Length: 299
Image (cartoon, rainbow, N blue to C red; front, side):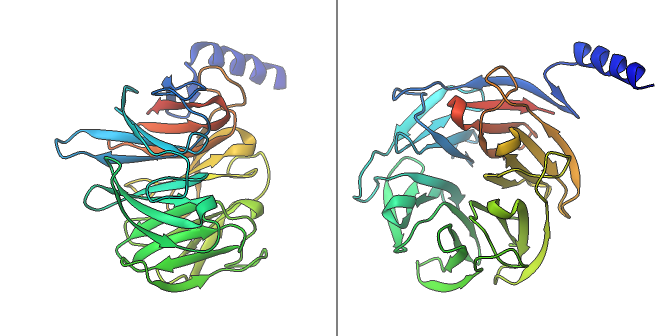
């Protein structure tokens, strides 16, 4: 029986395109370098609808300390930012998220601040934290920053005034070990990627613990050092399962749905995938960090 199953599996893999469970590899863009459309260490992605109706993909390139924008087919559009500590400059930026009015919040890790910058690269304001920040999320209730070294989430209001912090080091409910990303759903619930504990925790907008899912491993729904988190418009939860070199999709309750990807540098393969976004058509864009590229997968 096992031999027959193996034959069927091999035949199926030979017929299927690169992909599985409804998602197929489509294309990729990017390479190692400092030029337009090249990356020195991409770490995060976000999508922003432009005034004319076009949606652009923004890539946070931590290695080159800049942000680059692309069309959804991978055509380079613009680039801004550089290394430094002045306003509008970055030192190991680690997270990016859009806010209303065509602006972006950027977690400027080594400068210990979050910067608010227009999608054209014009500095607006900043929140000084006094510690590292590796991820940022924004809702109508405020701005949330991930302090990895402090194993906590800091919440600020729209004016940058500190509101509260939640979380501490540990493995219990509401505790974290090396948290590395954060996302919010349409209801304002906050999801924290608790990387060291290989799980995702859900909180309400005030930081009250609600639920969690995930455990260490290689099986479906298990995680190994995940570093990227995204909530799509349907409430599905996407995780860049970095240690397992794959992307996993869960429903809003944390139930496993599907996965795709494997270790490598070929088409549809990943080396430290670290961020995900999903466009309005359901296409998935994955920041393939160590391969210095972005991959597009289609449903």
